[in-house]
Amino acid sequence: MENSQNNASETKHYKFILFISGMSTKSSHAIENLRKISERYLSKFDLQIIDIRTEQQKAVEYQILAVPTLIKIFPNPNRTIVGDLSDTEKVLKILDIK
Image (cartoon, rainbow, N blue to C red; front, side, top):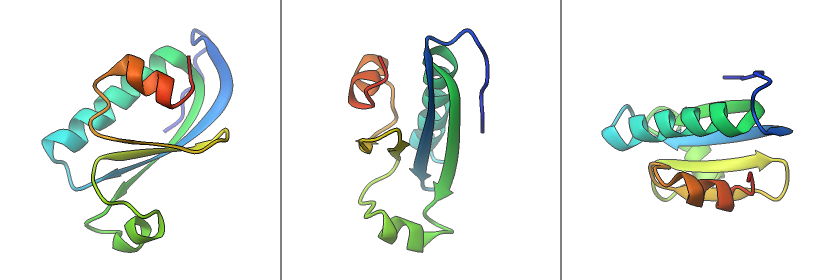
């Protein structure tokens, strides 16, 4: 998923991996909340969504213990958030976006 709208306040290109477990309520909320945050605050981003039910090896590789889990892989430093991403201010602070 990529967004190249020019109305966002940030010009860096961000890369995220979101680990989910099927389309549970929390997983759906995390996807929707990240979409809203990205559209509002980021001009460029890539999002890879990994369902740990079908890609267990990726969960092991990234040491995922709970879902949903979001990892910002670019720009450095990497940051990890567990939960549905509903607290926008907290997400922005942890991901060092705002």
